[in-house]
Length: 366
Image 1 (cartoon, rainbow, N blue to C red):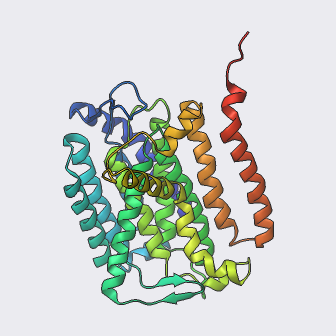
Image 2 (cartoon, rainbow, N blue to C red):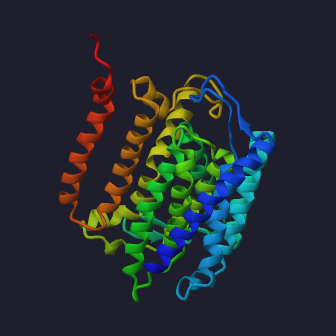
Image 3 (cartoon, rainbow, N blue to C red):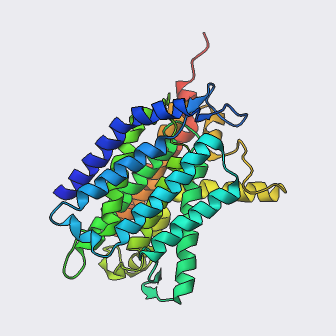
């Protein structure tokens, strides 16, 4: 755990101290997010924050190579593949932040990054399905790997609509996945808590918390596509690295819970951005529009329409993300009925805050 703490601190510190310099570069290159009809910010704000996040992750990766135990994660070459894929999507996103690329070019960059990771071994080896690991032909697994990367990258990009929202949700997802991955890795025979998924999750958590002070409302710097694409790819890499290597019998919640966890946890840790993406695509398709055309009906927009202020909307969406991600992960540690009670109580609290907080905080008329 001490080595993961070092990784967390290095990633967070480098990201935090690099962000002001990246902001200066964003201003110098005129990398600003203009004020559009669907946006909630009122003044043009610089974007390019993903570069600082990448520097934090790269620094953590270099430090890991010098640590006694974590250097073992480099033996397979997968972390190098993740770093290469991260560099590709961050570069594509940074160019888009400065010059605005067309959607096809950005998609090609995402596929290239996913392909590089798969070539270096970061690909699904099997698909967990109700208690068993199903092995599919290699071309199918590579295709599924690329689809997982694309879905996660774009899910994070979809939810990046309020100051601090996407980076905070990703931090919660990384924390939940770190806890789950660390626990699962410790259940191996022999136990080995030093895994690719756990390392990536710890580094991503540090990067997000290092960037959040600069990005929370009112944000001084947006992470832009360079950050959204990067964080999505890193979370996908952690998920892919762990999936297929989980022993379904390691959970404490019973046979059904054990069978479902390998499927449920990867979905739960990113359930909020995935839900937002699915709703957006369905909404636009049913309206006869392009699924990727932007609108002002995302979950965060609906929170504002309910009467929540900017910060309150973000904090409550954090609560929803934590409830879904950490609640699902808790099933790996305690009996299902105990977890269900705690999740039910937390759900009641979050629902109450979502519905009633605007009424409680609304200024009373004299």
